[in-house]
Length: 611
Image (cartoon, rainbow, N blue to C red):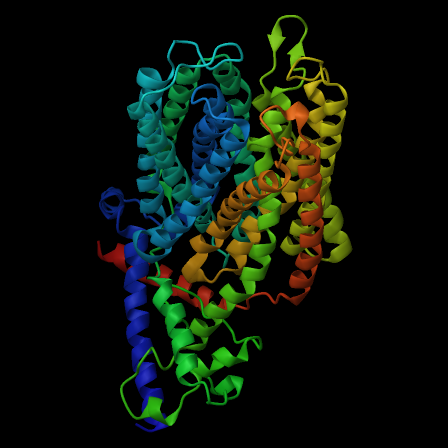
């Protein structure tokens, strides 16, 4: 086959893909709701694309996020105390188990993102994982009620529970990992599904899409506020079962509200399994290892407005990792036989692989920050539990409730950033977003480092005020406020920046995967935190030395552990700055998306006129 024959065959393939893509767009928008739309048309209403999506659907998803988060943190925020008081674990073991569990939660986000991008689509993935989430909460509530909280009211500051049965312990771990699986798979998909409600081809909706991620994290913290105040108080008082049942009820309401909003959502069909696409690029490049890449305009790409990845925009060529361009270089062997995707890939396929490679160093640099973040659910709580938490003579403030200051900090700094920093920095930098996502993430790293320094200073003060003959300290728990506030401020810059960055930089075919990278960094951060605790205890707990984080914190040096994390964060920041300067943004063909939307709209009008 000569080059002209190859080009003609490519054009025919492109025309077939365009026709197939148009029908898929129709299926995506009308598949699940076709009967409802046909019924509306029968009474004379004209359904248009603009009638779905937008803020009306996004608000439903934000409410779902808040309710699901309330349910999740109703379990997670006090889990370290449940392990020590109900399951009778020591402080180091409980902190490690919480870190591993939290890490598993966000590791499952990769599973949800893969199923969403490849097979199920965002809507179905969200629904299925929310059902799993509810089932896990129901089992946890029943296990606590029937097996674990014995005698009734145990697990408070005064009375520890009796040793649990093997059945109760097994049900407990089954339940919390079902909760981890359900919540983890639901989160990145929900964020991407929410961003799908805004069309990037519409300038107004493009701006709303950027704001959505800010409100998404805002909703997360509003939901966790109730868990970190009211539910924590009941659980700390021994009413663990009530707290778990309230979490279950919140998850059920979230699921029902999500399903009721189905008719107003804007649906996007999955783009297929990305693993073979990416693997094809590396295999094709390896098979052409000795081939010299051709010029940019001679690289292989399908004709037409759409890419070979169904429903995705084309990605323009970039000059990084030029060795992968060999996969899109047409050789004589490619022309002599049928098209083999494991020998010849399109520019868009190659650029999709390059995007993943470029994002990885940035993502790896966020893991150390997640080590900072995870201390709130473990060591911050253990530190607060041995401080003076009494308000007056009667009221006791649960240590886990101090995370409410983190939440208030997030809510306040979100408003400050959105309404003050963005306009001011936007005028100075001529960027409508104010600071870039990479700049925001760098600022988050610095503030997170300062939070660890503040935690270390607080621990030094706590140790100076130890009550003789007691495991507690006379230092007020409110000295923890600076470290919680600083962590909250860092989250606004780091995690919101991450959501925007990975969603914006991920190609269309792996959008959920992009959002899941944010969750996955939290996952690995928890595992790294657990590894650090184990390493520190093995090194420092030798001979007669109790180590830095012993059972009796008054005999340890948890302050040194905080300062260690601060030092690691400082080193990580230097590496991050280098990676951020090296990073080159993805360059998509915006005209292909606009043409795709126009064709989708034309096909919708034709289908509606025939019904």
